[in-house]
Length: 178
Image 1: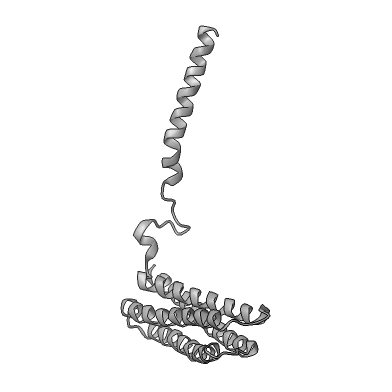
Image 2 (image 1 turned 90 degrees about the vertical axis):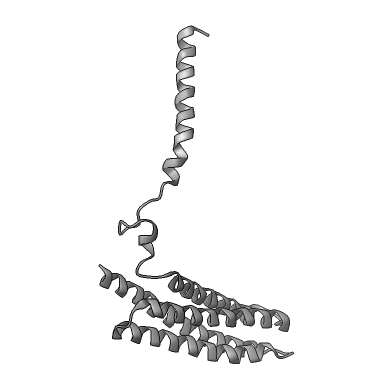
């Protein structure tokens, strides 16, 4: 290999090494959100409790949908499975209620916010009521899938309303903050 060619090869190797070493820092750098916010600023006006409440409602919705599908598609509903899934559903609904109560202290006391939180709480309470009926059915030795499906459908409707109102509340608080 000629001296000139080995110099070019060495230069290429150095450039490649530099690109590999510097590349991850550019890739891992924090990107701005569409609103131009980074870091903690992205969390406002919401709080961690708001995020946890929203996450709990989404998890409860997922459990309700899974129980609905299991009730619809399973040839035989296993009581242990149905009871376990129902317990997790109830735990997530209760956790969503608890986190929303914690978050409501951070949200402010203007009438629109208080009304929105009250409405979200009402939907979560209705979901909890339907869950109690579902759980009662899931604790039986012989489970009626159609009863489970009806309860899960009602739970899904209430959780969807609660989530939609929570999302609208967060958007309205963002607008007020700007």
